[in-house]
Image 1 (tube, one colour):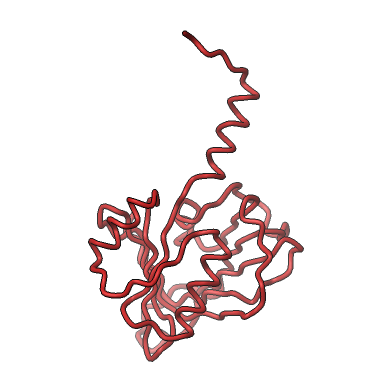
Image 2 (cartoon, rainbow, N blue to C red; image 1 turned 90 degrees about the vertical axis):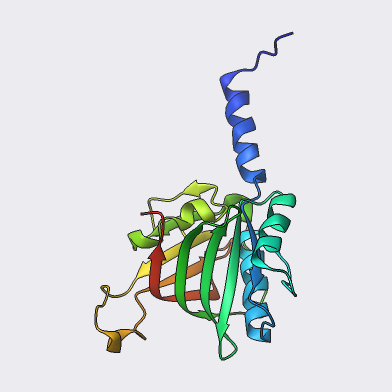
Length: 196
């Protein structure tokens, strides 16, 4: 028995599958502060990903949990002095894909991001892998379209001097369905891209 479908039906079906794909599980290092938990909840709402408390789970147990829930990757948020300072994106096979060092701005307001219309634009090429890690529905070539949008703004050139470590090199902005900045930001100080 053969099933015949038109190209339009195939396109709509593949688009539907793309919006239903489960990309990432979000968790923390052990004993997260309230600011770290708030950031993880903000990020999970912005990306429509699940956030779980790590508790005493080992990294391997977290990867197995991610796989059993149907996710491709785990985003681990680490903290320094109670503030989120590192986001490590790890595949279920244990491969570290991307690491972002920096700080975050959180919000207590509802984000109002329509994640099924999420788009992405980056001025900073080192963060382009986020397009494949985050559940991005459409790749935007235009940074002026801001509704349901993640925008990576490049601030300064990379630095070599350790004295410049605290300088921000990029900011990841999250815009809601009305094109307004939600206040949720990732202030990037360093990027370690293990895919290149």
